[in-house]
Each structure stands twice: as structure tokens, then as C-alpha cells.
Image 1 (cartoon, one colour):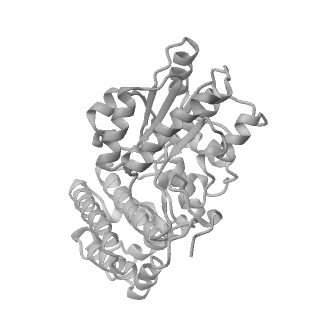
Image 2 (cartoon, helix red, strand yellow; image 1 turned 30 degrees about the vertical axis):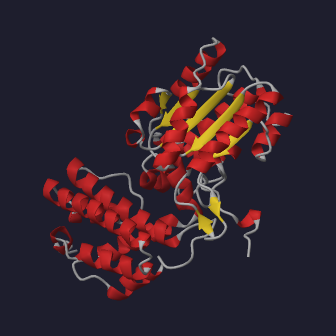
Image 3 (cartoon, helix red, strand yellow; image 1 turned 180 degrees about the vertical axis):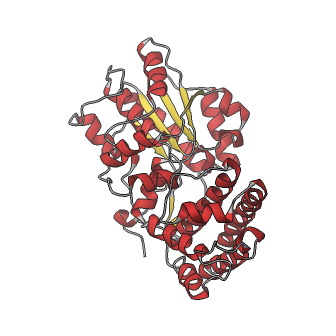
Length: 369
């Protein structure tokens, strides 16, 4: 049975959060905005721009703001446009003929999003640039994200970049640009976006209607708005609190609580969230924060009740920090491999939690009251 369009998840949308094309404004990236608009307003607009930086920091939000600005013919140096103009309304509904979005497509036969951006998706750019030229004005393509392209797609994109169409701008989002072909990177002008500070995070979350738990979300997401929205939309703070409470029971872990936590990783992925992916993210964040706390020798902003005291106990020094960092790298790889071969999510998470409970730093006894 064919999946209804309304039920198809968008590969470039954070589960539980609005799509970046609906973001009302761009906050915290003034230098990147100025660099782009200065080039455009002085007739030095490059044909391809690569937006890099940590995942979820706002690269897609900026790319959509740039696209709206270019297509509408706006001149405001802050990328502001009229939300009621016909072009902006068409862009919001993905109905603007001068805009092409390239992302991982939906595989109706498999009933899931494709794992990669294939060469067929990149070839759509050629048809788009050819057909849209009759519309006049600038044409804009957004690729979100270039990291998802397979080898054939990357080679096809390189050919487009080598012979750029007139009046066309390609906006390429890349989370890890070092993994792309050097020849692709060399043909793009790069805008590097930095992690947001707590104040900027608070303003953006307030824009999204999230005032409560903003500080905890900012701490746990490490300055990534996309990650904060994903955690907020899937009760990620509750899952993180459960993990903190579980490890607070060490060195004798509560097996029933561990089994309950692991069972929370089971369930089908939907457009609003993926229980297994959320659980792995929570574990990854916990281990990363443990390692950072040990290396810094100072408490981090708390993302859960009792987290500060727990981290001081489990990661008091550099040696413990290295043990947690090694565990993070090892278990992250195991989680990816387990997902690829469809291992039982609850069993995989339970094994991970029990392994962590046996690490030497986890065997330290809590201080006597």
C-alpha cells in the first residue's frame, strides 16, 4: 500500500520540530549572514555556498532564509523578507518553481527513507536548472545534507559545480565537510557556523514556544538548536533523567530500572520520533558529558537532577574521563552496526548499559551521607 504524502517523514526535519523552512528568523549567525549578503549586494555572489558547522546549529534554517531572500529579490542585509509575499508562501509549501530541494527520498517500496542521496536525486538538478530558466530570475537549490550523498551522487554534483548554470545558486549543507570530495569543497564558498551560546539558544527556543526546561535543553544539546528541538519533541529530558537516575544506583545497578530503560528503545520509528535513535543519543550525550566533566575538572551546566554530583563521582579525573570517552566511541559504533543489521533495540541497549556498569569508574561507591 502506498504511503500517504502527509505520513511521509522529511529527511531534513528534526522529529517533533517544525521544518527549517518555517523558522521565522535566523539568530546567532550574524557574521555568516553579513558575508553572504555583502557578496550578493555587491554583485559578487558565488554560485555555490557550503554551510558547515555542528549538526543542528542552524545551517538549514540559514539556507532557507538565504533561498527566500534570493528568490524574492529582497535587499535587506539581515535576510528579512515579507512572509506574506507570493514567493515566500510558495517556498513554505514547497511549491515555488525556482526552488529545488535535494534530500534523502522516501522509498515507498521499502516503506522508509532512503539511506542515501542517490545520483538520480542530483540529476534532478539538471532538469530543474533547464526548466526553471524559463521562469526568469534567480534559481536556488538546497542540498540537505551533502553528507548523505553516495559516491555516484557526489560525482554528479561535482559536474554541476564545474559548469554552473547562469543565475543559479546552490546551497549545500554539510555537517562533516572533510568527508566530501576536495574538488567539491574547492568549488564552494564556505560559511562556517559556530555553536550557539545559552542566551541565543534561549531566544530560539522561546521562538519555538519552549520556555520551560530551556536551560537543561541547552546544556544537553551542547549549543545545537536542532538537537534541543529533537530532545524536546520526544521527551528527551525525561529519558536523560532516567539514565542519570539509573547510574546513580551504581555500583549495584537496579536491574529492573535498567530493563525499563532498555525497553524504552523499542518501538517503530515515525515522523515524530525514533525511540532507538533517541535512546542512543541520550547514552552518547551522557558519556560525552562524563568525559568532558573529568577532563575539565569542573561541573558542567546541569541537564538533569543530581547530574553534577553523579559526574563528580563517576568522572573525577583524566583517567576516568578517558575511560568514558573510549566507551562512547566503542558503543556508538556498536549502535550503528546493530541498527544496520536490525538487532533487537531493547537487547542492544541493555547490553550497552550493563557493559557501562562494569567499567572501573562506575564501580566507585557513592559517598556516605
